[in-house]
Structures are given as structure tokens and as C-alpha cells.
Figure 1 (tube, one colour):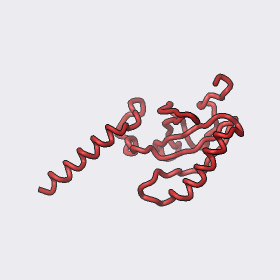
Figure 2 (cartoon, rainbow, N blue to C red):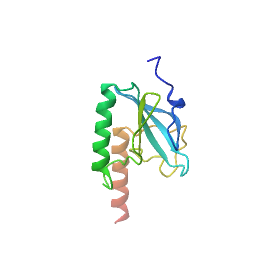
Figure 3 (cartoon, one colour):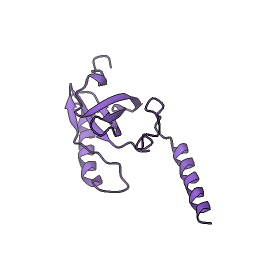
Figure 4 (cartoon, one colour):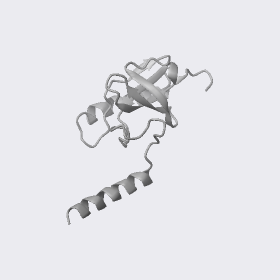
Length: 133
């Protein structure tokens, strides 16, 4: 929508937005970097101050943060959600951790597709099998 603020103008404390990597019905997901540690993460931005979609998303995020803390198999949300210029935002780990070791250049980063994840998993399994022979 044209009246929505530019995500790059939002005040998201401690994070630098790099570029958009996805979007859905509720908002956009941006590749971001935590300014102090330089760890890459994803930031979801949901426009529409006080809208039903923001309320639904915020309720889900609050419940998810409680359930996921310290769980080894769930993506962590390292900071509480925030609001700026009518936009709800929250920070999460990158699901595929492709940039966790800073191997890929941020300009080349693309979120892992299911096919890529399956291929990566199969390759890792083969490597493990061969190394045990």
C-alpha cells in the first residue's frame, strides 16, 4: 500500500535491514544484521496500525516466544516484538542458518527452499555414512 512507511525508515533497535527476502499476506520479511554481534537474522514487518492482522500476529508471536525459548528444534525470537510508525516487527533466527557462519555473501543470500533443504540433508547423510566406513 502506498501509505505504508518504507521499512528502511523504521526504528528497529540494534538491527540493520539489508534487503527484503520474502513476503506474505500479513507483511514482509527482511534479511537483517544485528549491529553489535553482526549476526544475520530475519525481521518480519507487519504494517497497519491496530489492524486485526497485527493483533493476530502479535498474539501468535507472544505465545510462540514462550513455547520456543531454549527449545533446540524451534526458531528463536531473540527480542520482544516492537512497534514503529504503525508497523509491528519482530526478529527471528534465519530458518536455514545459511549466513550464520557468514559463508554466503549477504547480497547472494536466498532463503533455502524445501528442495534445497532436502538435498542438503541427503548430502549430509551421505557424508556421515561414508565417513563411518
